[in-house]
Image (cartoon, rainbow, N blue to C red; front, side):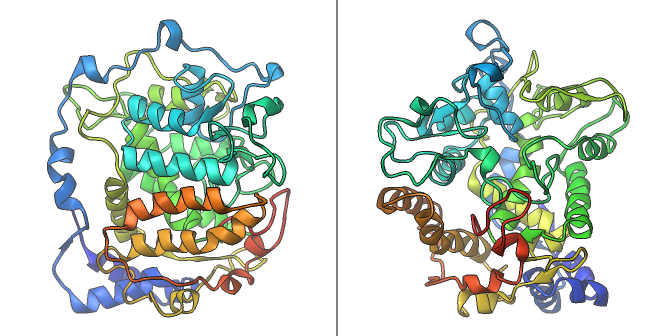
Length: 442
């Protein structure tokens, strides 16, 4: 796979964009464009070139069982079942690949996402640990977390809860941590875990012909652009951090195709058609005005085949998708936010944020983007966790172990601190609003 940094230069040379996004994406793009006229192969392309071109297909190994113990059973909310904003996790619980009550252990999340969706063990381990530490109970035996909100049955929290400073809020209460602004189908305001029908309709309308529809990464990028701009123009509190923005927001988009596409011998890389998309998003009906969302009823379709074994979606694979998106829409690398009014997006100076360890000219060199995002999380985590636990030693250790496993071999420039004061100008980070607490993520 190739992408051209000339694409970035086009954006960098537009004066109105430079004014709106005085940040890493456009400045780094300008440097690259000035230094290079030839196309550059994106990082990790060689690693996945053969896998992406010919992942193979093994029907027996890839077909996901949705019968017997894995037959679809909708949640019983009156009994306390938990469901939240992640369609894939909801579907896993509805098919008993995760516990049907919606509270799973760290190990169960890793095993289920790897088995059913073909998520790489590195990515599954990081996301499961991150969810447990930020939104669950890492002190419990076993450690675990909720795919929805806080459990009504506190027994699910595990046998050790004395060190918790309150009840874990699950993904539904993880705004600016696990759930972020500019989500594909969830809103920025108030109840940020329920599907917004207008956003779903915008996504669905991008492939109107049911006979040819395929919501692949190129189609999803169109929706990603629209949602990013929509948050800027409609949400005065829009916040876009180095982790929640650059990493999490893109993952919420790329995961749709990478994990929901149905694979066949004819299309081993996968096709995501209208029916499969609707099934995973718990949508029935047809067309704008005719759709109905059934909250928590996401399901794995019949005759659905996961990614090929050996073609798991790993962290380097995701990085490749991220950089490909950035080449086509560099604004997604802009750390910053609105300053209390719509259309007031202001970027953060990366040099000021990182004490000069990274800057706009170096961030797209080598592995620096990955190093920056994960080290920013590492530096910010102690302050975040102090609001969740009486003693942060164990949760911080769990998270640091995962971060070190991701970037330990990348020879990263060592980030010593993050100047969190750079974010105080953004009310979406610094202040509580519409039920969202302040300073809960980065």
